Image (cartoon, rainbow, N blue to C red):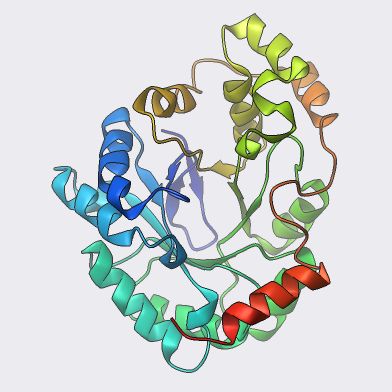
Length: 284
């Protein structure tokens, strides 16, 4: 498995399995299947409500804990006061582990400075090995880095062939923040699985459009966490290391970039901000 070195020296698998929208009831089975396929990076979040199933699968797998890279995220309702620290402890209990490899802030809204300081404290205490953020646009990221002590190791943002985050990536690289994708398959939108450019390139290598789209991100140095509840599709998404795209292939896929999100509206959209403010006004 290819790895990415984070800015604190921690090695992270570049390809992993994400459990967004995997039900709590299905999480144990899906993560077990993913580990059996060969995935060693598992990405969950407090908001997904499936941490327990993820933890059970990992603890039943027979694999050494240090051989699995576990990513989790603090949800916005846990950003204020002492809630971030308490929520990290709860996540550790839910997952049945002594540490989380990478803990992220899930959104750039609410008391993100307070929540990130809690991540810094958890890092010092050894409860997490590395810390970062998710859904932070360049201005959010630059601002956070200016006021806090530990530069995020990772920024997990919507990234796929239709929204490649080329401009945002420049700022991540400048700050030493690794680029991680959520939604690398674009949730099948924009005709992803039948896209003619991806299909034509895939025919040269005996690969599907999905595999070509995922391979493209890997070659750009993006960390990816494709999700499926079907083991055969998990295996297909994992089968990315026996071919390489040419510079010409990469140039053709770059042309697919619309420069706009297609899954989640911009986090600078006023209605999106209002939605997240509604979340932050109550505690779960």
